[in-house]
Length: 429
Image (cartoon, one colour):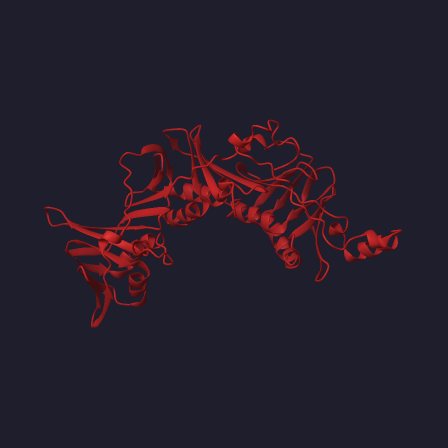
């Protein structure tokens, strides 16, 4: 196999395939990209790149390449990618035989050991897969970014906590994730051929979202069969394994109860929490206290007994009654980052009930999180703590440590609910 390469154009295609490889794998084929160079009867050459980490797969048509001699070669992804990135010349040549590869740029030559093509695991074909929907690439990238913001990597079961649900219904596609303490759901209208629930590993889906964001208004076709899900564009096709698990019936725990509603600028609140987090992140619970008053004043406090206290006051538009509650600062910030800029609405159902974030202009994206339980001192400034301690008959009973407790998790998938039919009625998420 012998190829002439326009470096910048070919490198863009190569990087798509390189991202799917796993340089830490012990399998040679998983560290490499398979290069297939073909010629048709008219002498026109095409080059296809294939790669996999055994969980995700990609097949893409390479740009900026001329086929001098057709053939197939398996090349180490990071080594060949580094070669192309290090050179400044635009015209390069790549030649492979069964034993070695030769990379040429002007008078510079680099020889690399060859890898037998038989070591490549292969990329599954999508011919027999069923079409699920078609969606614009920019819309899919957006709802993946938003809908995956509540995912986490669990240390054990249940499996669904490390996944995202792709759900098609009513001519819309939803992406949903949860880690048992929070939930994110994003949706957009698209062309739906079949209503389907697809469970996919969150890390693989997030990486896909970053990759397809640059495709803008190009249409992505989503196809599925029993074991795989495909995301097909004009010159590239991604495949990701389906997860065998049951995603919880999340709609059952969402409610519309609004004890207090706060409208606030997302960027302003995010800046406040960045400062609060300087203290909050030094505590095991990563907790802050938020007191929302009917006059529009919001006080946010974080205390670390061995470090200090942070207090921030800001103004917001408030409807409803006074409420004071606690949150994990990191979880709250994840929601704000996903919301982006502009005005947002936060609905509070109660001190131990769910809080829901929306953009002020749309409810297509929802971020829900459960509050943390506060001790008395978590919500106080240093001055208030001093006054409180002096008025206590037994000051030793007042602990300086946070009494933060995660809400008990009863978030079960459908087959696990045989002994709990009244799911969600005990304020457990």
